[in-house]
Length: 181
Image (cartoon, rainbow, N blue to C red):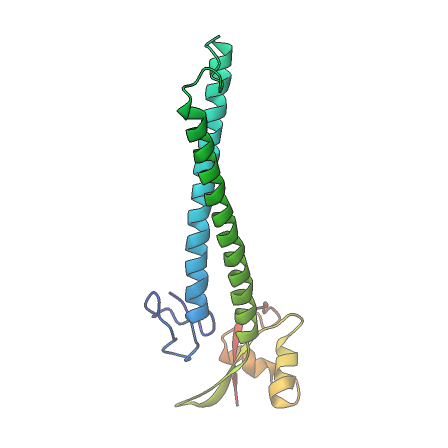
C-alpha cells in the first residue's frame, strides 16, 4: 500500500497511519472496503441479470417448441402461491440491496470529501532542516509555490532542484513538492 500524501511505499496493507508522514489512512482503508462491497454488489446484480436472461430464453424456447404453457390454471394449487412468495422475497432482497447501495454511495461521497479536505500542506522537520510537503493544486506553478513560501517566485529553480524535476515548467495537480525553508 502507498501513502497518497508522501508516496511512502513501505506501508502494510490496512495500516491506519503512515509511518513516514503520520497521515491518517483510515479514510483510504474505508474507501477500499466500500469498493470491495460495491464490487460484490455488481457481481450479484450481474448474476441476477444472467438468471433473468436464462428464464426469458427458457420461456421463449418453450413457446417456440409448442410445449404446453405453464399457467396458474394448470399448476398444482400450491405452486402459484409459492412462486408469488419467492417473487415477494426477491423483491425484499432487492429493496434491501438498493438501500445498501445508496448508503455505500453516501459513505463514498463523504470519504472523497474527507480526502479532498485532507490534501493540505504538511510541515516536516528532519536532519536537513524544516520543509513543507506541498500538494500541487489546479492553476499552480513552481513560481506561484515559491511566492507562497518564500515571498517571491525567484526560488522556483531551487524548488525544482530539490525535487529533481526534469522539466521545472511541468508539474501536475496532485504532485507532492518538497519546499525547503
